[in-house]
Image (tube, helix red, strand yellow):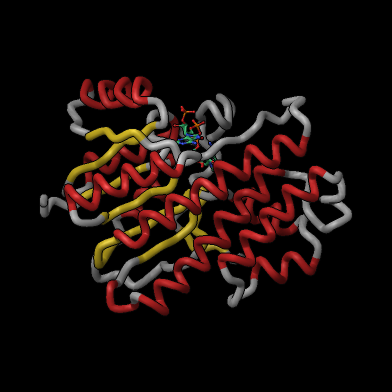
Length: 276
Ligand code: NAP
């Protein structure tokens, strides 16, 4: 088993994820795994970074596929005995003008952004080593979508006692409500991406709380963040930040020094804790 520290970035064959891997290759003292659901796209991205003189490693990972997540888990457990840095970056968004029915957009978006990310956490968080760092890439849209929820939902999503099961039930209810076209009546905002990212931010708050309760002595720090508005296939060419600039806050959180005890369980943008 290798004693080398290891960092893993989900959805890192392009966009912000690729830029996070680039920065970690330069700054993280250990092995950095670029992961992609498609091995061809992943290997092409590895080759691109190699051209830049960097040495990322590759492993397949489709966060929609539990078998794929578990294969990565088993590999990391066997080769490294755990994980030092996990960046949950993989995500999807329908374009504003996409005509796919809203209920389908809701189901597909929640499947990857919330349920996929949660499955990765369920399988990989138990492998986090002491002083590990976990970064869940959410979005400022989670905050604006929270503001668009009913008071009752806002209270639930801001609660310091909400459980993961309760959050899963709420995310499932959103998808069901869109199918019955009652989501607005039920207090949801009209954004599937926004609700999925509410899920990511609230999940991060819950997971940080559980780490406090169950593994306090391990000094693991886990946060959600917004990378900013970044020029990628998702956000388009008009966005204000380059992918490397978008990687700055996730990388800052991934590399919080071992003597840091904060931020933890926070929503962070531009390296600053934001109110939730
Ligand atoms: P992007 O360029 O579209 O890249 C998304 C990445 O996620 C791709 O590598 C994609 O792989 C991967 N992915 C999607 N579904 C996956 C799955 N099931 N399993 C594994 N990988 C999967 O988007 P981005 O702008 O870099 O976004 C990265 C993260 O930042 C997302 O979570 C996004 O919501 C968040 N974010 C972005 C912005 C922005 O302005 N760009 C703002 C706020 C938050 P494929 O190439 O195979 O599709």
